Length: 255
Image (cartoon, rainbow, N blue to C red; front, side):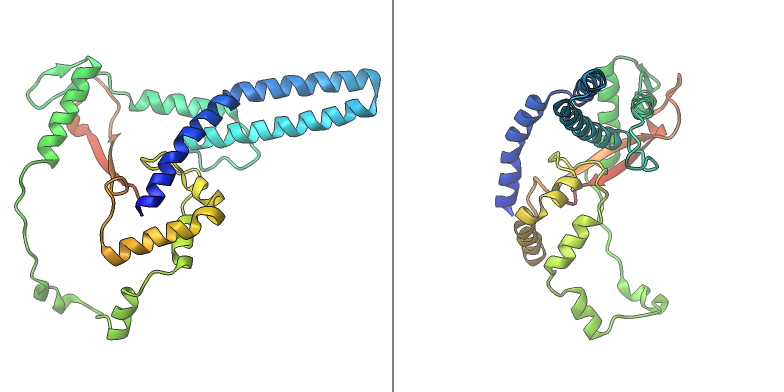
């Protein structure tokens, strides 16, 4: 398991370098479109076979650039209803900006009646509130399972119970990865499910070994056993906006 995490971490450096080399995806689209239009103008003027091949190459380059930009925007905007082939850049950027503006908290009213307006103060209010709500010592309660037995409609047989704890198979692990939507938010490691699907022929076996190791040992590395606490506004950020108007949603890192 540690080997998989170490290799994924080592990939981040080359990926960052590759992204810097490729440049901004939107600029690449505009540049590719400009080259395509110029090559088409030259072909219309001279009608040369070499220029026709140039137009075809520019068209392929432009289409690839558009696909890369659309994939990036889909993941940022999380628009499930946009189908492949529809670029809709204005729609994407509008949705992204709208989401950012809607989720931005300009001021907050804490439980003691004070209002915080500075970004650092707002962040501190949130941290203190949820540390009090979720942290600290808690009393653990035990549940008497005998109370539930009269309400159980079905109990597992010995065979069914054995199947529930049977070793996980490579096909089950693969199906679990491939059921995750490619445009879903990436985990704390920065890799989305689309990366795992594309690289499955190379990393599938190692991922299966890591997952099987967890089921056998019951232990998980801290790098994988991470939970992101995301605040989802239940109301718009208006004067008198309280911290309690935020719904905490726990996002578990399952990859």
